[in-house]
Each structure stands twice: as structure tokens, then as C-alpha cells.
Image 1 (tube, rainbow, N blue to C red):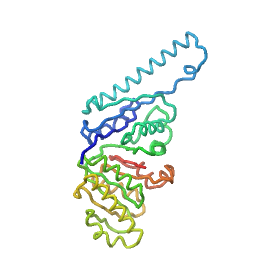
Image 2: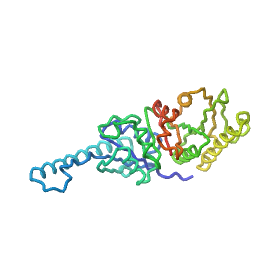
Image 3: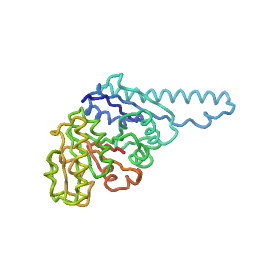
Length: 312
């Protein structure tokens, strides 16, 4: 299958921390196969400089100085980011810059920009210490997921290995949406994918290739509900096949859920060298209902050395 260039939105704030996802992206793709949109939101213009009242000479001078300083600061921030990208190997033509005045929370404005720009994903560092409102107030993951209803969001942390991914599968359409996103983004990378499901049954781990699933999971699928879960695992496998994933790159794995589903998933992923975890969000329950579920909230809070991809 032809690998299409990917386009990723990276919100930056002038800190090195906000540029850390660049390392993950460069491990995932050859720099020539991805374009990055760097977005920076400037502070709101003070009311004294934006009104329609008659301005004194002193006010005009201060207004010019304010906008000149703001322009220089934006240029400095973009130059810093561009330097990091060029040193990482990204060609000049793959880097785009977008700056606009902040009119709402950074998370909401970034998500609106992502949807307007039709990017493939928004990528952010897990914890950002920023002077910008929206990245410092409240939970960043909650804010981004609340507003990014169309664009998948990638949260990165630490040294994530890009060679192995796990997609969490349940019997909901959201699981298939995140599978489709991961399949598209990983098809040309050589990464292996595990379709992962945590369940109270079985009592031990079960793993198989998709073609053997009906046979190997027959004892597990002893109720209509469990049969439905196997059906979704096979639907997810079919999506991967459509994107050109050879069966040797795909496995279905069931792990025991002893009551701490998120902990079981994170522990299994850490033990098996998983660097990417895919999670789905099912509407119409809403982003807040999604985040209130202990599994998702705990994974987003506790993951380390991995990138968590959330698709809605």
C-alpha cells in the first residue's frame, strides 16, 4: 500500500518541554515522510491597545512597542523550534508555522486549528509546564479531549519505543475508530500491533494470530457478550489487513483483568516493550464521561515511556 505523507500539529509555548514530542515523531517516521505544523498562540492584546478610542501619542508609542516585542518573541519561539527540528533531520519544506492571538483556552484553540487544518493528529508532551492559560489550569488531557472531537490526540512521555503498539479493543465502535487511525498512521512504519483486551476471563494470557482466533478463543467466547468481543477483535484485525498489515505483524491478546484494568494494561505494555497505546472514545456519552471512567483516566495519568493515542 502507498504510504501517504502524514501531517501533525505540534502546539509550542517557547519551552524545550513542548518540543519533546519531536523525538518521538522522528523515531516513528523518516523526517521526509511527515510535515509538522508548529502552532503558537500569542497573549491577548491588552484592552487599551485594541479599543476604538482616540489614542494619545504616548499610547500609540506603547502600542507599537507592544506589537513589536510580541512579533520578536513569536519569531524567537519559532526559530528555536525550527532549530530543533532541523537538527533532528526534518527538511525546511516539511515545517510550517502558524501563529494567532489566543482568544480562548489554548487547548480549545489548538483543536479548532487542527480540525480546520485537517491534520492527522495533534501531539503534545504529557505534562507541560507553561505560562499559557489552558496548559497550566486544569488537566491538559481533559481539555484536549473535550475539544478535539475530530482530530486524534497523541500524548507522549519519556522514551517511547515505536516498534510495537497495542490497541485496546472493547465491543464499541470507538475501538474500531482508533484501530483505523493507528493502522493509517503505522502502516508504513514496520511496527507490530497487538489487539489487546483485558477481561475477567480467562485466568491467564491468551495470544494468537487473527486467523486462529475463532479456534484459540473458543473457550473464552462462551457467552453472547464474549462472542461479541471476539467479533470486534476480528473486525479490528480486518481493518489492519485492509491497510496492508501482514498477519505476522498482528496478534490478538487477552489478558486477565483482576480489577485494575488500567494497571493491567499498562503493566502488560511495559513488560512487552509496547511504545504506543491506542484508546477510543465513544460518543454520545461525551468527553467528560469518557475521562471519568477509571480506565482511561488512570492510563492518561500513569503512563510512562509510551505514547497514548486517543481517537474519538
